Amino acid sequence: MMSSEIISIKTTAAILGIHPQGVRNLMASGKADLGFVAKAKGRNGHNSYRVYRAKLAKYVGREPDYVWPEEEAADGAC
Image (cartoon, rainbow, N blue to C red; front, side, top):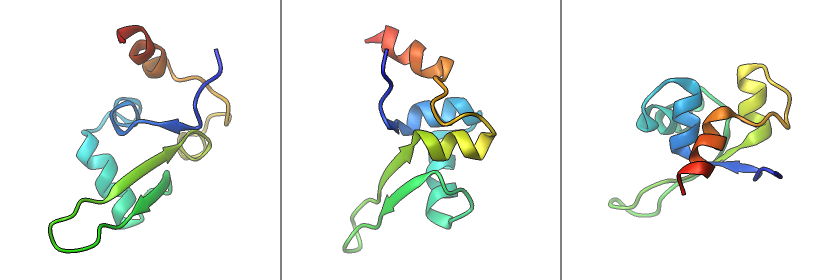
């Protein structure tokens, strides 16, 4: 199975063992370079987040093409 280059915030949170908002906070503050944060325009907008597989793998010390067990569980849940 070929894995996507982008991993969901929910799956990333499960991999890191934190709440999804914690992933967003780490990325928005620049404390974790896991991908891309598109800043919202206006006061009531929400940022958009993209976690890239290779960056997450580097952050936790894995090979870039590593398939996370959490991803396989998410694929099976659909």
